[in-house]
Amino acid sequence: MSASNPCSEANITQLLQTFGEELFAPEDDDEDYGPNVTLSVASPPSLELLARKAQQEVVRGDSVEEVVDTSLPILVFLSLMFLTYIIGYHLKRNGIMVLHETGAALLLGCVFGAAMQYSANNSFLYMVGGMGEFITVEKALVFDDNFFFLVLLPPIIFDAGFNIVATVLKHRFWHNFDAICLYAFLGTTISMLTVGFVVYESGQLGYSLDLPLLDSMCFGALISATDPVTTLAIFQDLNADLDLYSLVFGESVMNDAISIVLYASVLSFKTIPLTSSSMLMVFGTFWMCLLGSVLIGVGVALAISLLLKHTSLNSPGYEHHEAALVMLSPYLAYLLATCFELSGMVSILFCGVAMARYTVVNLSSDANELVSNFYKLAASVSEMFIFIYMGVAVFSLNLSGAYVRFACISLLACLVSRFGEIYLCTGIINSWRSKENRINGRFKGALAFSGLRGAIAFALCLSAQSDLEGEDTKALMTATVLIVLFTVWVFGGSTKYLVDSLELRQEQAELNCPGSPGSEKWQDRTSGKLIKAERRLSTYFRSEEASRAKEESRLSDSV
Image (cartoon, rainbow, N blue to C red; front, side):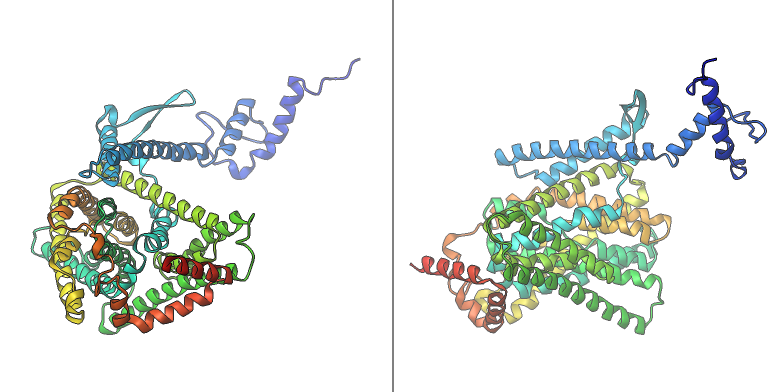
């Protein structure tokens, strides 16, 4: 008699039923495996039921569907970014400045969102595995505030400190540092209080939504974060005055840092009562958070500078090693600040500024170019992604009459506060500056005009959706997105006409005129001791090879 085939159907069935008795343990009796199905140990499950159980175990939690639901929106946004860069190329090549890349990204996102919203069944058909599935606006907006704060915003903030301060502004940023700080600290506080109280009082009077004072102030803090990326790009293309550029840029990046810390400080009143002692405590926490974040960012930058100074990483053949260390350092600063419950954004900004001053001098030229280009590209891609996302998000907003009225009142408050803070702070700054170094009326108008809103305000508003309670918090998102659209399209689109009408183009003859903020005379008169101390610090962190190269460059320039 021949031996039985171990792969026969009878043997396989017996084996599966044996394992089925263990698979369907008594604790699983309450599970529903389909209609008209009952389980018992005396009646082993059928092969069909075992297959159904195995399928549930393999894809429990709908993990496959979750991957599909996440990957499709990413594909959509990548395709839109691809189109945005093509459109941006043609806009720049043909000298069209009414619509910048960021405005085009917003517009493209709006068009795509409208197509999804108003197409048949409010969806687009796509094919996955031969089955018809749908993507809606809600499915496209799958990214939360953690994705924005951990992935998209860090390269934008770091690039601002590392590349723009080092390559575009050079000394202009530091020579206008007094004005930048006043605009950022006092101006942002004025903006937060103005917008917050206007929104709150309009609700109390019945003109708008009746938001709690805490929610109103949080909204005032987050919407005070400016992002004039469109204005700055056009300034650079038109060769606008560098002092104006440094003021607009410096005020925006410092303003973002202050807005983030202000938002966190105001939000702390959610768990503590509003008293005089608690206000003093929050005021102290604000400064501790700000200064602590700055120290962590600068500390990481100085540490990597010393590492590069005392090692041979800048030798030929190690470019990727030193570039990798420099690329990872900002995220180290960001996460260190976050672990200590400080502001990662402030930390990464000052890490970039300090690395541009103290770390770059110890990098090889190849590594420096690699790091610089990497963060420029990462910042550009992140910026485009956020603006496309905001465009798509328009069609997920509540555009009821009450919410739109709230957005209009908020926009009016933002405009009033912007012009008020700029003119007030400029008057204070001019009171201690000499006559030839005062900020003139043309600059004041341009600064007030440059208060565009963008990525930081939107990311903070995403965070507010979970931080604050109540249905009316959705009004904050409606107002934020509509304010971004208005400022980017209207103010950003008219920047060229502003530059031409106010005659803000840079004159080469004025680049180093006596008394200008870029001249050595002004430098020695106003901040000579501070700058000399900073130069000694820079020399300490510079390697011997870098010092020798800098001296040779100085001698060649003098010749």
